[in-house]
Amino acid sequence: MARPNEDGPDLEGCTRNHCHARKRDGSGTACHLPAGWATDHATNDEGPGVGNCKLHGGSVRNARVAARTAKARIAAERFGGSLDIDPATALLQEVQRSAATVAYLQLRVQELEEDQIVWGVTEETIGADREVKKKATPNAWIVLYQQERRHLAQVSKAALDAGATATIVDVFRQVGTTYVTLVGRVVEQVIVGLELSDEDAARAATITQAAFQTELDNLTSGAAA
Image (cartoon, rainbow, N blue to C red):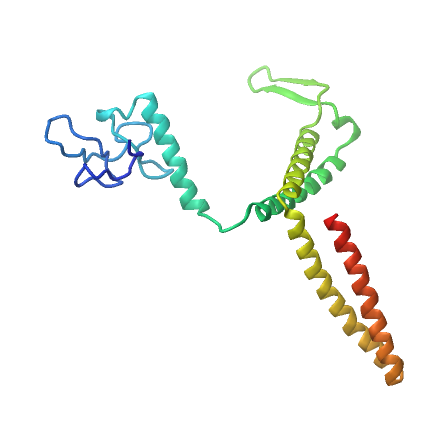
């Protein structure tokens, strides 16, 4: 069965903007009413209509579920698109996003007063007799902080299991190599400022570069372990 709004080879003249269901008059032609006409999945502010019209079963439960799925898929294609990315890199990016969220939530938790940690408004009724209910319950910021920390731990483990460690090490090594090069340039300026002999200057540069490279290798090998 064709998905909502998809052309069917046996439905001549049907487009993605039409109902696409076969008419019941025996002509074999397709219904050209707007997709989702007179249903809750017709054209609206969220996007174009999808699925069958009301006259061809568009209001039944299965058709509505299929239409909602189609709308979600279309929205994802329009706004999300697709990225050429491997699972390890995707997980690594999620780790970075989650870590940033955890850091933000931690700041919000640290701003809480002591009496706000486990005491807050749980229900508020607006009206003539305005009623506010409070009870001992974890602050919403703390709950979000705990949830995001658990998520960070989960995606971090998944990233490690998927081989994202290799990506982390590669990035670390690239940054480290750039740093070593920068340090080397600084050392050269220091050597010039100290007015060392050519022999001492060469030895100082070699020793410094080797020392930093050794430390970089130790750090990256430890991250990969």
